[in-house]
Structures are given as C-alpha cells and as structure tokens.
Image (cartoon, rainbow, N blue to C red; front, side, top):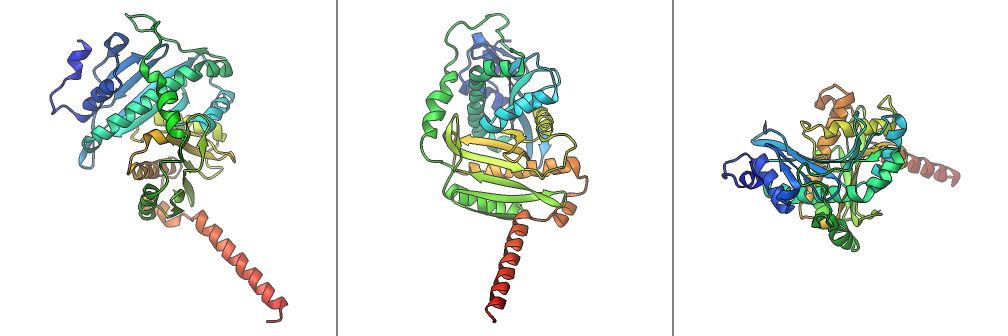
Length: 366
C-alpha cells in the first residue's frame, strides 16, 4: 500500500493514527525516503533512520489515549557495561534537551522521545511532537560521530531499503536547530513571566509545597518518607540551543542499589518502553551533586502559552511513577508520611535564628 493511501483517512479514525499522519505531513516527509507500517513510519532525513510509532489506544478517564514514540538509532556495537552508562550520562546531563540517549541491552544507543495523545490534544501534540522529532534526528546527525568514538562503537548508518543511501544534502529539517532553535534561544527565556506564575499556582494545589516567582519555581512530591524536588529554571542557558526552560526532578540519595548513572540508564530504558504512559521529554541522568535526576530543556522556540502547566502535570506523574518503583505503599500513605525538605530548611533556619536571637539577648542582659 502506498504512503498516499495511508495519509487520508476518514475523520472517525482513532486519534493515534490521525496524530501519526499529521506528524508525517507536518514534517513534509518524502515518499521516496520513507516506509510506512500499520502504526508507524520510518524515514531517512539523510544517514540515520528515524522510527515514529503509535501504540494501540487504551482507556484513560474519559479519553482513548495512545503513546507516540520517536526513536533514532545512532551508535551500535557498544559494550553494555557500567562504564558505558557513565559515559552516556555526561551528554545526557549537560547537553540533553528533550530526547534521551538510551543504551539498550542490545548494545545500541538510541535517541528516544515519547508523549501521549488524545482527542483534545491532537493538534497541539501533532505540532509539538513534529518539532521534537526533527530536533532528535538533527542531533543524531550532528553528534553520532562523537558518540561512536566515545563509546568505541560504530555509527548506526542506514539507508532506505529500495531508494538506497541518501546522497543529497538531506531533508530540510536538518537545519531546524541552526536556523530556528538557536536564533530564538538568543533572547531571554520566553518561559519566564505570567506563564511561570500560572504554573506555580497549579503546583501549589498538586504538590506537597511549592514556591517561586516569574523566573522559576520549586515544588516537592512524596518519595518514601522524604520528597523529590521539582525545579523550573529560566536562568539556565543551554550550551547548544541558548535560553529556554530547564526542568529537573531530583530523587533523594541512596534509594537504588546501583550507582546513580546506571540507575539513570535503566530508568531511561524503562521510559522508552512503548506501553509506558509517561511523557518522555528529557532524560534521566545524574545532577551536579551526583543525585539521580530527570532533566529536560525546553528551547524558547517551543514555548506556547499554558505549556508550563502541562509540563508540571507530566512531571508530577513522573514523580509518582518513580516513587512507586521502590515504595509499594498506597499514594495516600506516601503523602501522609513524606517530609518536606523545604519546610525542614525553613524550620532549621527559624530555630537557628531564634537560638541566635536568644543568645544575643542573654549576652545583652535582657
């Protein structure tokens, strides 16, 4: 069956397949350089293949929800060792945006991003995910040689099964980072301002505690008897794409028996599984203090009013998901026993201030 026969479907077709068709059209993918499956398509922007798939819909609340996954293999023949996880952790932690470098058990390193789609989010998700997929395949072409050398593997070069290698300059999407993302990143963060305050107001209702201003925020979610820390930061400048929004979720220390970088690699493998329902924009890695952290950077070019709240809700779900992996208690039990680190800091500071104040009053003879 030809690609053209797949693209035009009746309006009652399920939302996942409509999203897949929308992405195919928005990315202006050529029939000559693509292969279409029943719930997927693969295409060659130039030297690397990208696979975009959509899962069967499942019932979630009032909606039928599917998951979209974009995968670009970039390096193969990698030894799956603790050192390989450590090496991959560095670019994930310092240069990652919205696709994770995921080392599979088959020794292949892939860029992976995923999201969910339902009827009310069809147009937005189709538009947003097209940008993510274009950024992913562009980054693959930019960084694959370096990663292959670093990991002592080989580039996962690929060619269309009938059209063969793409010998032209490649698809126009390969210019997206240089010509669209970077220019927008030269200005101040588009994510600061009223949208950040709206996101803060939402998190004040959906987290243990939240505080912040127009430039950023922090919020906490239960994790065992302590908490994980969510941060939105508009001051951080990404070394590749410039200004935007950095989002991180830091998990408390000493929760996994493996090292933080290995745990991060395993969590990335888990989030890459198609059937998982998380929005996988970003990557698990180790933070600046060696803490297990989920990190995502949203460039200015992807800003859309109200998107901050969607990101916050997705991160709240991730906080709940990762807490469930090592704590089998009910959600209610976790929320009841969790202790806020922010409140603990404030309480300690208050006690220290009161102690110092009392000492000063005593020395003054009051």
